[in-house]
Length: 357
Image 1 (cartoon, helix red, strand yellow):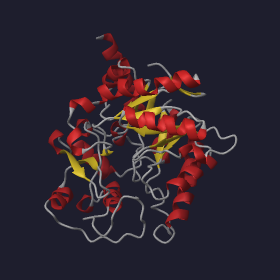
Image 2 (cartoon, helix red, strand yellow):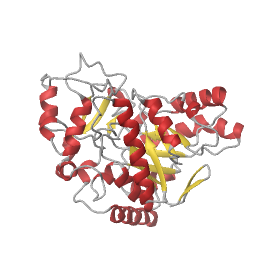
Image 3 (tube, helix red, strand yellow):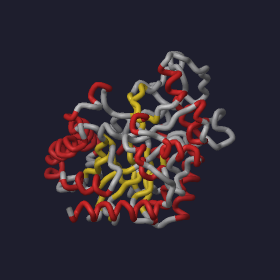
Image 4 (tube, helix red, strand yellow):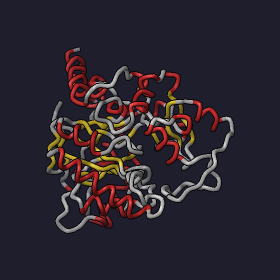
């Protein structure tokens, strides 16, 4: 595999560990992946959940927790670290400012178009800004906005296809449409950003995400022009993943037919592992909802059948009676919990096997 270059950052292993909230990818997983030469990513959504004043002071608890996680990760690695910050978060600006002040290497931002992300950069900041998009049009809109208003070209793009886990940037009807496959999205995005690369004499790497599980998948998508990949699901069933063992076991126990598209309370489709909680929600059961957080801009608490934050937090802890696990389309392929190092070695062997065939 060729190294991935994002500005002056040289990523020897061109694998971004996808950010997984709530509490799935924290400093433990991120620092371990960074030590192996990839990019370790801390998910910001719900990061302050363990702070004692989380419900009382949502903003400050999250700022404090994010600072702690970045600092802990930096103590464990000299590798490259990123954060994943959803545009849909009500505390988006605070999380971006905190990440930049803590000198994080990369901010990955999706779940909406991060149209104002460059405005938070401070003088001398070296934090790279990488939007997550699901279409060439979205990439072009961001390039136009950033260059016209901030004279800033995106440092890279993550292009997330419909096989990803969690919230998806597609209409429900388009998720199974081959026209929206990652294989089609990569050349589409590259085509839309080419004029900005030429105009500003800057390389904008394209990182493929969504449904990439094996080294063979990496070989295939890089052959279509991707400069690197983002992988999340494969890192869940590792020793160092920050989720509970019960959460990891849910992946191992899952069957292919359990990979289900749900409609999240925040108004987006998402991919999850089907369970009794989801079946009850689909049947019209409503869970009592009290929300002190107001964490997602698009969540209408008076209309929602359940709290997405509470459901994901419960699952992370292993309480699947009151929650469910988001997962990519290949989660059912997991068979055991192993170390990050062994996982990456397996991926490299798979890549080399694909290269020989």
